[in-house]
Amino acid sequence: MKPVVAIIGRPNAGKSTLFNRITRTKDALVDDFPGVTRDRHYGSSTWDDVEFSVIDTGGFSIGDDDDFSSLSRDQVHQAISDADAIILLLDGKHGVSPFDSELIKILRELSCPIFYAVNKIDSYEKEENINEFYSLGIDTLYPVSAEHGYGIPDFLDSLVSALPTSSAEDDDDDGAIKIAIIGRPNVGKSSLTNRILGENRVIVSDIPGTTRDSIDTACEINGRQYLLIDTAGIRRKKQVYEKIEKISIIKALKSIERCDIALIIIDAHDGITDQDVKIAGYAFERGCGCIFLLNKWDLVEKDNKTLNRYIEKLRMEAKFLSFTPVLALSALTGKRVPKIFDLVNNVYEQYTTRIATGPLNKIFERATLKTEPSLHKGRRIKFFYATQISAKPPTFISFVNSPDGIHFSYQRYLINQIRQATGLDQTPVRLFFRKRHEAGNRISRKKSFSAKSRKKKKRS
Image 1: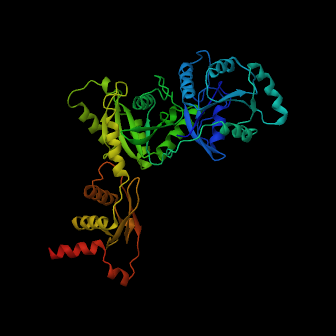
Image 2: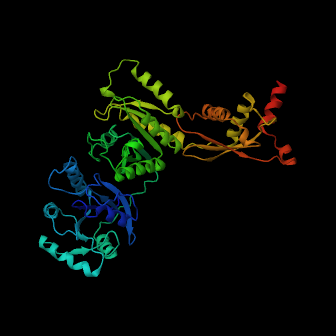
Image 3: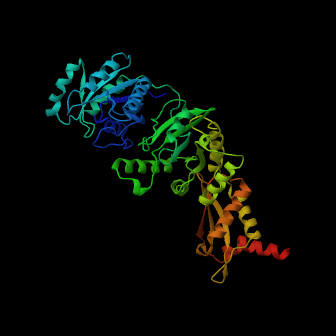
């Protein structure tokens, strides 16, 4: 495993800015007011050929100024327990605070390396601002500017020299199935993440909008690797006012783009809403595999037909995802949660399927024989050949003489024929048409599907 470095400190000390600087990303949300980061956020970095993981944490505060203070402190403590080295980031602009003293008391009980960095020191002239921090009983201080990069190279040299050596174990998560957990605010996304992981990985609260960032967590279940991506709740645009929430929603949508499977969480107690369908549409447009999860099923008054009624309504409201599996569960009690990964594995297997060109063209030949395409401008549409151009999801191109003449209903018919012939009944399937010009002798040597179909019909 790669060594882990946790960044901790008072609110608004610049931890997320330092996280972005070290990881060379913009993954952590950054704003000018305290409390933007609430959950632990993980990233990867390399310095002097040393690879390590970085944890960004919420600001550590002593009092209970808001509903999330104690929860954020719990996340800080968990990050400290996971870390091989710790960066205590001090605020060189505002000076020493009681939060710093409290954190130092906690850190002095630890045996791992501790690095004390004074942030917001962006020039040599400002380095004198670090002097007052020596009153905390610290021997070595590193003046840095997370925003401008001042002092960062020297600081990272010292940091990586103290990190333990990585094990030979493969840390690459490219083989992991990437799962985004998406839905409206307060439908139970973080509760489900914590239930799957068996720990309070992300903060859970009854207040909508608790999760602001997209939180990645690697895990292994039944010998298979997964990357869980807990996302911020996606609410209607007209209900989004704060800048930070707008950024959170954008990051949630980006998480859908990089996932393999989207778990679309619906609050079964509230019923299926227009916003649930809209969120499902985001996942469909981005071409990821999807699974509907009806959460809070334990709160629903039900009989032996309740689930079927929910599924029927879901199929009617989200017809574009009629192939998507549906599972009713309770993140609170854990009921049916283990079944999620059976569905994920099944969908992922189909999602990554590749079909050889020969069998694929036989499917198209049978389909066009069974139901011929319509005429376009008085001419019969000819299908020459088809091939798969990518997986995730299975995507096909069919070369025809008149792509514009193919009605969407015939396109849907061909997709259904592919599904039936290949068993791809739980994954998106994409089919595009590209024009191929008839070229005399070349076409005469290789007949189109339509010509073959008509010939077979005459024989019959």
